[in-house]
Image 1 (cartoon, rainbow, N blue to C red):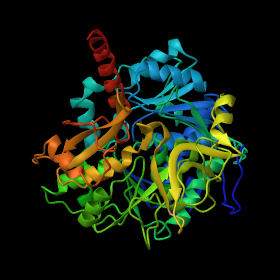
Image 2: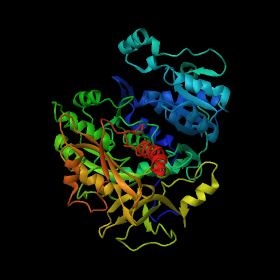
Image 3: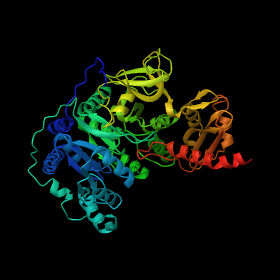
Image 4: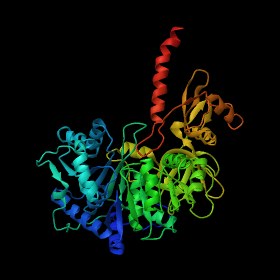
Length: 555
């Protein structure tokens, strides 16, 4: 379906990344989870035991196994175990409600699910045993991965948070899964064609779809990043894993890349600002992939407290546009380099990144990774490739581009043009090969026949000293069809009015780009990964417009 670029990127079965790290760094720590450390040798043994256990449960090539887990060692163990024996990992957000779980289980054909024995997660998964094609649940004990003292305290003090799990054939305790000789039967994996992961898209423009990421897609993207960051010293880095591993960005940049370098992954179950700040000072991570909202939160806290963040050397920001002011403040606090990258679920995910040495251009998503080709095509006529410098739809070719959408041939055909993946993002390339995103096609505001790009307005507002976070969307306008509206969260202890912000925007944006209104909020909606989310705000404004319509018609 896609055409590879001329540069050859070596690929392999995904589990080879771990096997090679085990061979090279066996005695070194692979995971530090809340103070409990696991060496690469121990991790390799647990993965082999889990792999054999999954084979006992009937997992073979093509069988879909779901991981409905927060960041824990169980995620890493079961991920590589399933892939080692040819199974397909289906990533689930553990905060999904039953309706969302049901859709994804039925769409993917997940027959085995791995989850935790917590009331917050387990009951939702267990309910699927009677409502879907799900046949078995592997239940992992939270207390089993904590340091000994914390484990005892958790079992005693937080017993109310632990779910009651039946002892029947449909439930498999994790201890039973790994109770074997650790010698899985060898399976031949063809990296270019065998699917490794079904990564479901966010579903903001329709029903979520499973991007089929092959073993070659995932190992190619890890290798592309290895070549992009030669400063990383194998076996000597500490990776801070705050982003959720079920998200494609963390799966590749934190887990697969981290393990391929033999990093010690300092894993946290979720982002807690105070915990992260203290942990950075104590554990001294050197590599910190994040999203802009995380860096924004740290900037705000560090301005009022005393924290040592100087161990951090490398930060790759993804998931959302990185405001220039956010990057500048974080670099000042840490002395590290923060570079913005770009990608999507369908590309495993990284497509471009700014260089870690040399020039990282303000507002740019960087240059293409090795082996990647971007074509800027006309949104109105996707068959037409536009000249350099013109704005158009970013279309991608490369070994990291998915094989298509799971069981959706029509959707797959529509998202490719001449073998290149259509991203739905508007951007352009400068004379030196740096790419710039203007906005999502679906987010562009058509205002009186003119295209207004929310990101342009957001970038200007981020320069105001009172602004912590901002989201701009299009709202209905009786005169122009649509008009921009800004939602702003102010920094703690700082005062500014909507009129102050409008005055600040004057002269920096055109009259047609000036927001029709600016609304101050205590909080702005975010996705699980911490990315600012427009979907909820768009829905709010639509509901408001629907309520107002009858009154307007009655006048």
